[in-house]
Length: 300
Ligand code: CP
Ligand code: NVA
Image (cartoon, rainbow, N blue to C red; front, side, top):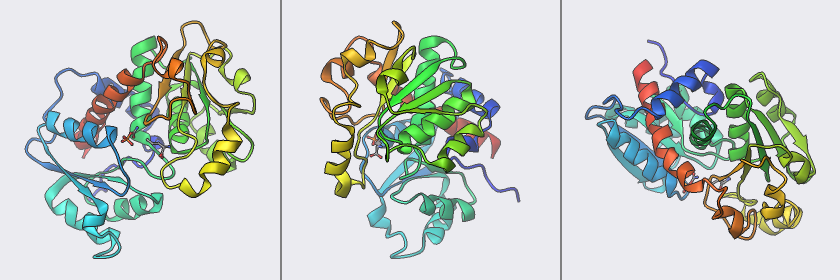
């Protein structure tokens, strides 16, 4: 039997498949792809947007979401991650997991007979990138040719966005302090999409001419021990304020995956100002999740 498709990183989709997922995300009458079937949603880390957008996407596809804190399941304690995946596949048409270590997702996907979806790992946040690209498409009509400037950490969110941007034909530039930039493997993986990422130290150079200015927290979940070191490295040069976004294209929009620390990686004026599309972007998490699930289940 052919293995099911999974989404552990955006480049699990080809450029054509990504375009198809984004088209499905905008479909006002989604197919009832789940039709009474379940989806298991496992969380090793907290979530607001991901849990609610996934649950509602499953409902809109005619399915039933079952969200569980991973601690209740006891992954690799009560039983192995592999046996958890095999067990959940007995009851559910798909499995979503938010994990501390990306390798846990890979282990589950290796044995799962149903699609496994990355709901955020230390490495990647592909569902966020899908919603981000959907927001760019809604704003500018097409993604191809847009210039996306990410000011901040080379983390799960910027990595998935850079890969997704490349697949969709957009330019991606990232600006952060030395030591917190993409490594060679990241840059090679992004370049494999056909569009290499630009890396610059200077945030003003990064946002010049950008259509999208994006940032995320400087300290991600699980990095609490490095918090003061990271805040010192980023502050205040890499904070997106009105002066910085003023250097971007006049019609530029501001995006943030949320949750945010107002006054740190972005000022309140930018987060809640006229260029911000953060709530449209948050709502798009649900539409993008629905489009992705409809696609994954449609090809299963
Ligand atoms: N952006 C995002 O993934 O939000 P949550 O952590 O609240 O799910
Ligand atoms: N980079 C952040 C994203 C949260 C949605 C984190 O991993 O905590």
